[in-house]
Length: 367
Ligand code: 6CS
Image (cartoon, rainbow, N blue to C red; front, side, top):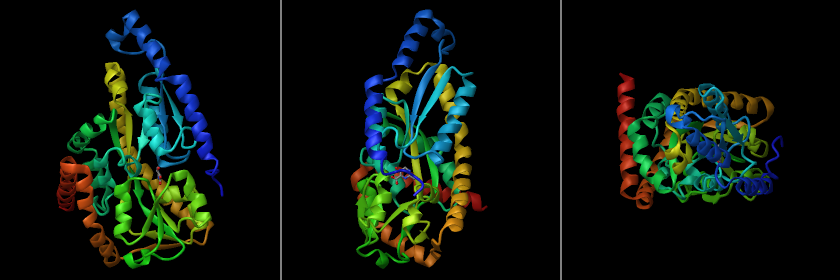
């Protein structure tokens, strides 16, 4: 196994305690802010007199899609601000599990983080829409137009804000792919199959609807879970299956094209609201610039890593036919009702808006 994921858990806890202990929010940023407002320089240009540091926590390791995003974000912000803002990146393994990273943003210990709906929907049920299957388009140009629109962003703002969070961006990471030690072609193949999922209850409902026995667990435990046969399979984008070495302990990779892996970039709301105008401008501009970058990057990463898996292993790749996919589509539909029950009227509005925008854009792009 190339990735030392098993010791990640204990290390993560130790580092996050150190971070909370030495930070209590961004002390340096607060001192700079105070110094700047005393000197009056903030009101003029809202540029910090001394560099400020923004901490960016990832749910994935170095070399991942989130890492590519964060590195490009760092490059852009540091460049735009002429070095007045420094970005420190904390890859998975240095701070905590996905749910713990969200808590670190909520309590101000880190300014920025990735928060994937597969975990975050436990806190913000509305975001569980991205764990539902067959909602987004097979055409990523359609998804890009819909998910980066102000209309969709504005629908998510209130539930994120309610949790003390600011939604900065909705980020695609590629098709979810199943791994298993047997072919999975029909819902019947999932009978008694222990499928590891992320931790949100809405996501587990989908795999129950397919007939599986869903086993939610943190990302860092998946490799050993597969190796020790505590779980029979897992679902993630190809780049993650390669870099977390899951394919080493699985025989099949099954492309059902049932859902895309969608993540979100968040910040602490209070921190965002209090950012000096110029800094918020740099942040918003960078976020906007990165939309097309990451759509292209995730595709590149997923294609390259699939080739790497094919070159380095005997993993068999199965792509479901559209008739086979239709059986899963059909089985997934009742889960939308469960989502609406959990996410309420706002969740229903979000689901209806996304499905109708996807249909509209698909029609528009076919013309
Ligand atoms: O499966 C998971 O838990 C994780 N998968 C990816 C690709 N990113 C973050 C998430 O926590």
